[in-house]
Length: 553
Image (tube, rainbow, N blue to C red; front, top):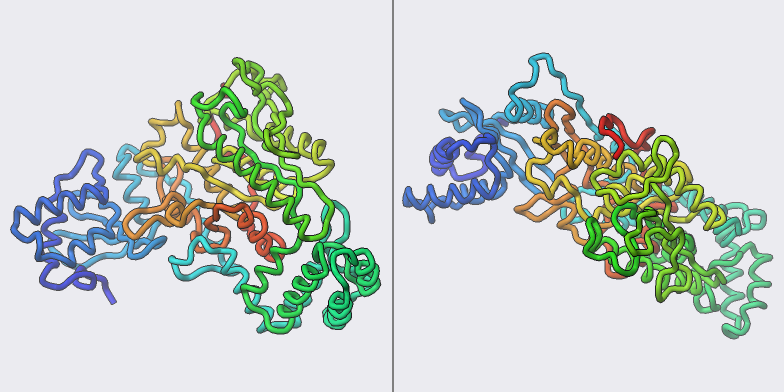
């Protein structure tokens, strides 16, 4: 069925809405944005004496994010629901709406913004949609940001519908699980399959029920090991029994809530690297300096809270392991009276949280001494990631269990480290520059010398699509509201005229997106069901800086 204005508003309103759309003065950019459209409509409707008589038009225009003004037609971006847009071309003499796809829309927009492009110009198109053809996906935009909940429901549904296949996968996961080379949970030499696991569980739970209390733990462990149950089930008989009951329920009557609680009890993380390269990262005398503010405070606070959570998590699992967290940032020899020239700095009020600083190096392998803006760090990040990997292996005595990037540069380094080290990777944006600077994509060339947006936006796209999980403070940060596009949503489609047309940059319905709570248990404990059972990666980049043409500072 062909689209028409009357499909979206009452038929009698359609002529007035069409008249308004073609009466708006065309701005210099030839692009009308949502707020300007609504203000213009309010003024026009008042002037026409119809301010209270066009409710359908108001509803329609509130969903229009922008209008491209061409000589004979208008092209509207209609956001019919969160995370989903349609493109319509309209002509003055017709109420028909001609649908366009993202490629067609961006091709028009690119030429509109930059009419001087050569006629034979074929701008590179980036379409990442095929990477999302496999694996679970959310359907309802109101569930975006609850990826872990969706994954647990997906996994539990498969455990119920295909028990032989998925119970075996769960068994293999438990049998192979280690922490720092120490085998935990199941002895595969004793418990050799799912059937033996179910039988062994009954014997083990009977032994646990007969234990007298925490003081009986050594004797209980000596009973459980011959049955095939190793450390990691809990710190007390009561805790062990709860965990085993959860596993038994999953094998018999799986559901998402039980699976989430069980996976959250499995000790998987004790060594964490938080990556935050730019700015002056220290604990005193740095706030207020360029690129130094909220992110520093956030990462320090998160590291402290994370240490407390992990310590409790490991203790409840019955493991005598102290967590270690390294905040990885840049070492700046010209420290200007701060501690940013110190390789290792203990974080106050923690047991084992450290700031680990690694310098930037020039192509000649010389240490870069002075501070750099966050917009000019890009040429150094590839070598920085190589150097950071060596430092992490030295301090951790091996690989970390989890790597979390912060901001675009930290997320890119985290992606490189994750790929090279085979470690679960999480991303935190803090801010996405594309949504902060109006028309930064359309006029990227004007910003390139100072901001290098061509590299940053490409880096954002890569790390979003490579992350195992992305933590956001609110769902609005991901997908916006009914009226306003979210930060991540702005990467769905856009054009950088003459350089790149992104027709599908990110799938917001992928379960990697998760809204974090005030407690770090979400990002560590709850993420296990994604990283431990179902891999969330869709791709891995082979180079961090495709198309970089800027000079090293």
